[in-house]
Amino acid sequence: MISCFKIGEAKTSDVKILSEIENRYRNQKEQSTAHFGQLTITGQFTDSGLLLKILNARSLVSVDKTGLCDSFVKVYMMPTGRFNGFAPVKTAVHNKNCFPLYDEQFNFNLNSDQRLMEDSLILFSVKDKDLFGMTSQYIAECYITFADLIASKGEQIIMSLSRPEYTDSMALRALEHRQGDKQAKDFLKKLKSKSNY
Image (cartoon, rainbow, N blue to C red; front, side, top):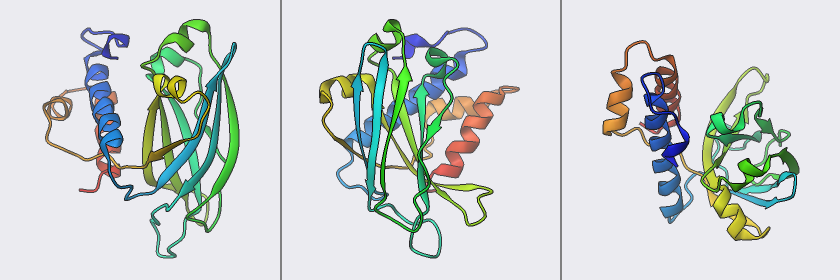
């Protein structure tokens, strides 16, 4: 999967970031319990792209004092360099519910080259909208590859939600010490805010 990133002076942080994302994806697949809930989707490739359905979530962990969630799902195509011009999409907010039924579908227009890149990832970030709608709190996330969608043949896929663990890996230490690399600094800031540490 790393071959999709340019390896050069300005792009080395992309490789390290992708390496961390691949680790998260592997960890998600190895999870035996879903501490933060589960997300159910279907996905099917068509002649013109991808039809993605976000069906529901189960047992979402509440991040506020009410014990309930006002959740929505935001969807990103990755790596972003393969999907220039693709803006993230999101579901409607489902209020006061830890078992939301989203039941929304999204059509992504993909060219034939994009459809064939089976190592591409889709990131599903589940968030809790705050009372005044000014900010959203991160609940958890999950990933799926195009290869996983192809293998599912349109059947439902249940994914465990997880939060990234901020570890002391070589890749993260390298990112922390990059001078003047805004993308690396932004990635680390988001990772630290999402992790449990």
